[in-house]
Image 1 (spheres, helix red, strand yellow):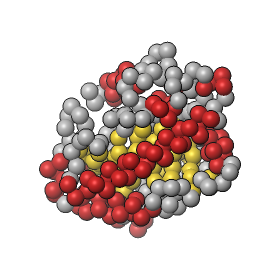
Image 2 (cartoon, helix red, strand yellow):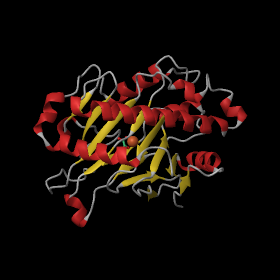
Image 3 (cartoon, protein in one colour):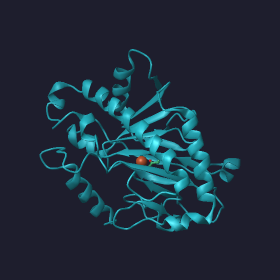
Image 4 (tube, protein in one colour):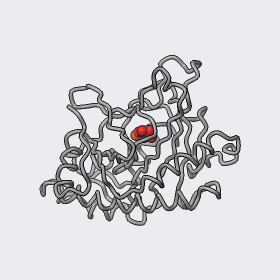
Length: 279
Ligand SMILES: O=C(O)CCC(=O)C(=O)O
Ligand SMILES: [Fe+2]
């Protein structure tokens, strides 16, 4: 089984894309409207950010979770004991951000949000009626004007050989939010777990856009769309000396949005963060 990139411009794109999400929790798009030049420029600018000590002036705020998270406080995936080998910056339009990068991230945030709304309409349109009748409102409406949607700029530093035994760039995990959209990173490593337990590479041609289902859409669709485990494995050989930058946008509904009989987006997020021990 292989993940195939779907041509965003093709008439069958919505159907093929949603089928891929249903089968694997992941969909990969080529010829999509996100400007590649904007993405590469963000990668370049943020490589510089992570390479300089100025980053420590933007340390994250505990209550609001915006700002820079150094490697020492980086996440430990659920069920893992080793910290991921990564550092990252959490960008919200209302949060802290170095002045020089603010306009560019805002621009990306807006464009990627607009595309996410379109993709959510594709998903809704191709959801069987007996499932979609339980959506409390159109899926695309759930994220509209949400101040919870998070843009994460991730830096996986080159491996130096002194990493903790068994630590990897990102341990296997599922995303908590509705959907995630992620331009292919500048280096490979992202893998998704199939139903039979095998791990496959997510096609990472520069220019691909990767979309995956998060727990909240799994909850809202009664499990019809699976939130699948994914991870970022460590590089080998000469690739060890290379940094990897990636830019996931985690689409979060407004907190009052009803996901299911059990949960609003707010109560769901709270429960998960308590479970993770971060609040
Ligand atoms: O870096 C990547 O390619 C994926 C990152 C990821 O899965 C996450 O931060 O949730
Ligand atoms: Fe993830």
